[in-house]
Length: 364
Ligand SMILES: Nc1ncnc2c1ncn2[C@@H]1O[C@H](COP(=O)(O)OP(=O)(O)OP(=O)(O)O)[C@@H](O)[C@H]1O
Ligand SMILES: [Mg+2]
Image 1: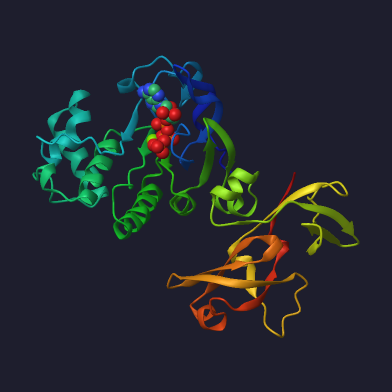
Image 2 (image 1 turned 180 degrees about the vertical axis):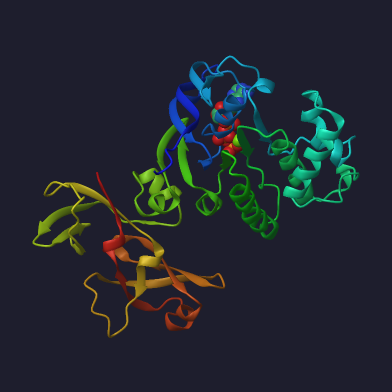
């Protein structure tokens, strides 16, 4: 029998107002046991506020919060069994690593031997064995981040809450810590709510992503689905790079959907079953840079568009090429390696193929 997904946290129409600011608006969301769920959205969209309400540091203006079947809306933070890592780490600078991690256990009046065992295990989990007697001031940013993580997991929380825990780290360390966090999650199976405004980090780490904007949920989905089938223009533009074409008129011709853009550019896509667009309705097309390619003399693609190359941005594994496609505006292409730089010099006139079968098509 397949295990039923069980709710770890249930938010029902949760709101938070700070005077005139509605930071979170009647937001409902169920977080399943054992999943790593990411809150993703631009600065000020309410991510921290939502996390603080789950932890109990902010009291909702409306709605209810249930953790593990218990309504905790009015329960103080230290009775909620949540572990939190703050963006600033918020470690105690005058204490050593052991004491920082042990803090929550002492507050819970755990016996000395139990504390030593639990702290040892937590430090092992975050790969800080041998650092117990170091002062936190003598640690690097990455090590301090691990101490904060150990301090949050040592109490055996029902939910682990992480508010942009990697944002202070440089890029390489950040990548390494993303992998470690994911591995830690696989090992512990802890229900985790992770906050970030970095979409790549969200795509890489999460079981599911909640995209937020202005205190509201725009879409909840697994990373792959979010990338391939964004629910609206906001999500399409926020997740990954994407080209937004000018508004199009759509008509159906046999097995094809035909889009007319800017009066005379005609692009074609395979007809989709799910596409429910009325004849002649205004539609919006979003195309990922990896679905645009430089046309070769051999290619027979139906969506050939001529354009002028304006820039190349070489990234090692791939190159981003920007072109001026006249009535279609400026577009970006992504091609593996760096061959595009010589094949399509800046200023040259080229033809590109637009693969609309992979495009996001939204009704206007
Ligand atoms: N204590 C507060 N008093 C007044 N307004 C607040 C308070 N905390 C948050 N806000 C406002 O609520 C909104 C949401 O803030 P929040 O910190 O939750 O955003 P965020 O998504 O975490 O942003 P960031 O990515 O910048 O951390 C913002 O408009 C913010 O200015
Ligand atoms: Mg925040």
